[in-house]
Image (cartoon, rainbow, N blue to C red; front, side, top):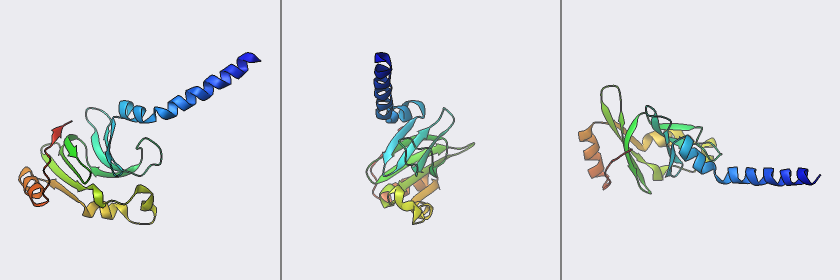
Length: 146
């Protein structure tokens, strides 16, 4: 009887430890990097890395609105902006997202978050267009290779 009680205690401890490590799991095994305001860089493998606006309620981002398509090769972000480049079959495209304009993900049931997201995302852009937009929006960040 004593062993059953100890086993129950260890099971509870293990479950709690797993809950505390969910963010670690998302980052280590799903390759997720939180970008703030509900945005996540999902880096599934060497061929699939994309940015999405996360709508899932759990710790891992397993449901959302695609923002920047695969394969994101360079990215930077701050409290307001996400800038990125993605590699297509033949060309590299550039992207700018005003993440500060997005409502909380739990508001997306009552409003059209996809429409808000689309109106606050510029891309795909050429390198020249990207540079012009960075200047006009006064974004001082540089892309960092991921």
